Image (tube, rainbow, N blue to C red; front, side, top):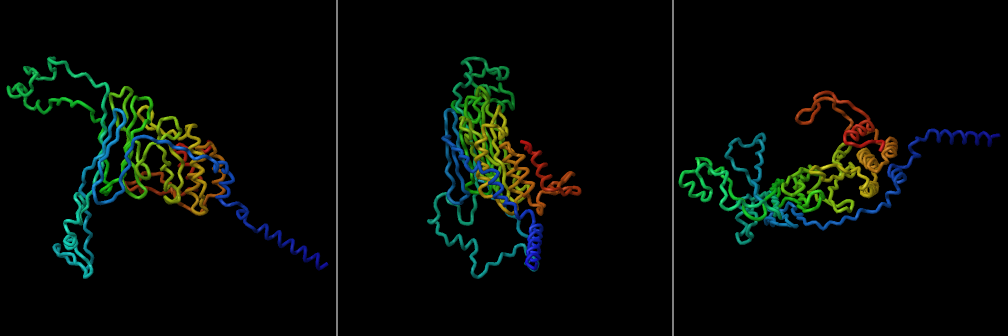
Length: 424
């Protein structure tokens, strides 16, 4: 009888402990759940990128000898990289601290073991400084300048000899402008407006200048590549670095019209990271820009804690378009997701889950990812959950009360604003 009672108590205790065990303890980790759902993508092949385009990729921010000027060309296009010096911005003097001398002319004290700038300059012999090297105590900032030349194979025909110059003033022959000026036959002020004869040879179709970003050798990339097969000439990609934490490339494309008679500079945008190059992502001979959707960075977590979907931009009819959802880029998205799920975090997961859901939408599996997100998102995090329904000031601060919403609500809102449909 005692054995039976003991067995009954043990069974009751076991059942009670099982019932008290939290449901989440039986769930696999987020990493295990993602790999179970997307194990097929772990075998996705990497995209083989072939790029033989002429390019210049330089700049590391080093001080010292000035960077070399460079040049690339292809067919009638020639692109040069030169530099202009900028004056470093002077730092505003810090306000005097309490107890400091109020005399504006008071010299800064130098400690017994410190060396002043004048003494440091004296210690370096002149013969030790290389030609063109930055002097001691001197900082030189250089801004990159990119010039694009086009040697038109079908230039406009020159005017016929002896033809009357329609732009010449009354009484001027146009045959000898200098004689006309001397004879007083050109009205006052017209000499400045007179068009100079176009020099023979390549013409400048674009000239872009970047910022030094506080560097003597600023990062910059230049590339001649085919981005738009609808016109007869390749494009020129120019990407400058603007500086800053995790930032930024300022990228432009110089492209011609359908017959090559006119050239236009198109702003691609500003993107996270250093200068960009175009790549042929799907192997069809036309180059695209491969980047990550910057809208996901800092949206629900810190920069390092954020994941972002692959974004593909292409040049079409003189405009930059987001072609990320084009089916021909599915292999690229599969390779992107493969790299995304190799290291799934177990803490601060909302930044990862946002990018994960976005990339799964690109692959047509958004609903599956959404259900996984609902089970694993961090309910304790409030990053990105305060919504402002009012105007903001110049600093981006809300001019009214904010509303706190849940992570799924905030994520759905952000996805819709950026063109991601959860049902995809």
